[in-house]
Image (cartoon, rainbow, N blue to C red; front, side, top):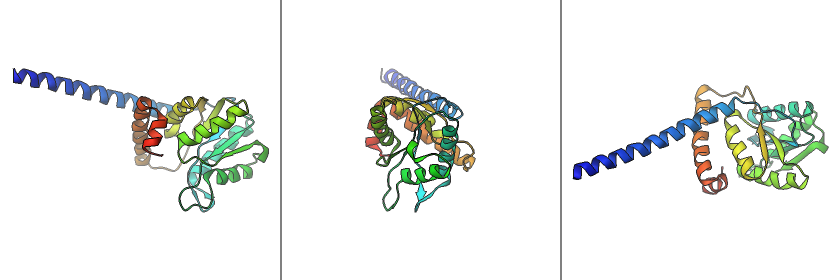
Length: 207
């Protein structure tokens, strides 16, 4: 009887483990697939997700995002470009202000720019962006970020009431190990966010 109970318990544990592994594998494939998708289309606004800046100088990742956003703007895909990203501890500039400077240099007029400089995570930035864009009657956005980030920000956009499409940057300087690491981390973030909600995930880990 004890042996039979142990066998049944083992089967339940193995079945649970199989379900979890399958869920993570499917999520990884979805993260990878979305990272290769470019959904560039007309929208109410282009939203640039923040990235690191160094003493007022844009990091290579932030430069790649602003360059891509400027290209989309000049293609006439949206009349407004929102730059996001707050100030990290010890910073004098916000990611949004540095990104705005890059876009001005790339020919995007100041009248087209909107800054969301309070967010310290993707969820917080997109939630704040959704609030003021809805006030302007804008609910469809074309989001620019790194490829691995695409699926998570699409989900977050939906959670905050935006119709989000992604147009990720290409050619960012990162080794294959870095890319794999990003994809694995995003897999766990998406897997958790879909179950508990991305707002709750932000509250657990503000990032």
